[in-house]
Image (tube, rainbow, N blue to C red; front, side, top):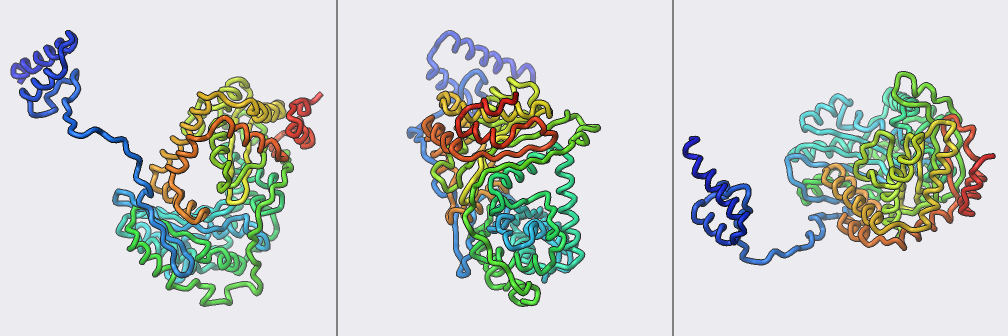
Length: 528
């Protein structure tokens, strides 16, 4: 074998020498074609000889991504999108969440989330449900946000009907007994307590608090975590059924499937959601005597503060974390239907941020300002992050930081300074990087089937149609320095919101922050 291979190695060397001597590549390609019929015999030092009969045309991606949307007679929307593989993602998005709890006991939407996939009309208990899911190789989940509750599952493509049956039963035909209800409440209490005991989950709680400060006592400002209201303890099955009967109506729901045949999927959904009645319709005695109407009023940004002094020493015992305090500054953002929404997203990408041990993945970026101008210049800062929270009618743009208690006011000054210096505009290279980072983050996330599913159903739920990522990518590319200046001015024209958590004795008062933003001058935040 070795002796036979010598001539071929010699030919490779000769070809490499020929290239170095500057002989025409065309003659080399012709010789290669004569001497070998397989591209595997072409030396690595020579490009493959390709024949092109027609010029390559750079075409635009096909519009629509094979998305289809159907509306049933009862108002339910069904959307699907093609995907390849043996597994699919299906589920339902409901216009629900804590923003609709006005008139209902606080926390009822969280209770609904925890009761998902339990006993129902067609499934005796959770064990029976999970037996079906196991046979379908399915993973299910239910998550509630401020404005949406999402029931989703990934399963084999031949098990869609069984999984949809489980979802339909948990949404429209649940059987809620006292034991399951108490277990759901205990789970929520444990989660709320546990989230405050771990630095890794504090970011979620801080986001909840900045909403409460920014939208005080209305819609988006209703709490999702840390529920201490006595009414939460007294939530009954009638309260839960009453709330579900209001929010789980067909016109408020979107059913989606990624990787399914559209027509078959519509037939399945029709059987389980259109032709089968909810349990509260068949048995009205499950409902309370008077069910509040849903509060569909527009979110009202108020601004304000929420101070939560606390001893966080316990979070450092036996853990690799220093003693920290936390501060969040919020300004009035915009809805995802607003013309400035994409520019706000680019601004968030430009600021980016993360923790002291962040690797700087998509959406953060080691070249974002929260790294280059904040984390890299202030060694005492543990984290600094920008967030853009947008909903159908309002939003809040927030900057979060964690620092030692003695530096927490300095952290506040640094965050506000970042917003104020945006009035000077941004460098073209920096802006281009932020746009690219945002597009990359958007497209890479959508390579994950469950994320694609959520994006699809949220688009139909919020806009009434499927808006594709290519549309947003084009808008992102068009964001200019003038757009950044405009949205910066819009943010700074609003009243600020402030959250302080931990040992926050030195944190400036709200009036000082309000003056700083109104007059665009940091001197009001410096303490004598």
